[in-house]
Image 1: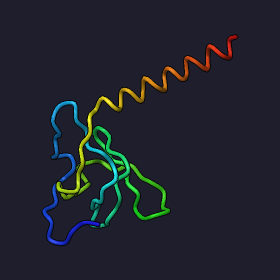
Image 2: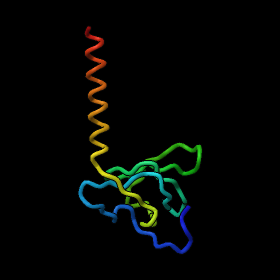
Image 3: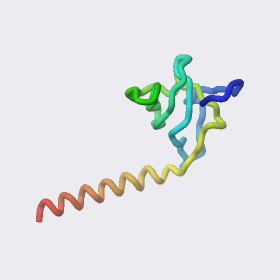
Image 4: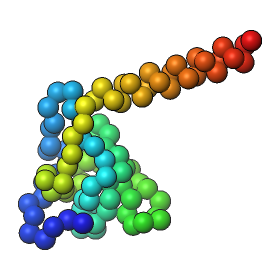
Length: 98
């Protein structure tokens, strides 16, 4: 939940350092409605308007966040996961060809 009286800024105005990305799972305001951010992409964010409601894609410009709620992680993890998926796909292809 967003703290009352906290200073909110647009999510697109936050520029993390190189090789660092904003980690998901934090509250935000979109069109004066509180939402939960489940993923932060390059220009958009995936938000859940309320528990159980379908997730929607929102431009980061429309998301207001409290910077103190944000966590950061290394961007390398994203590429490691991609390499893992590609290796698994290659392995499945090799097994199906055998």
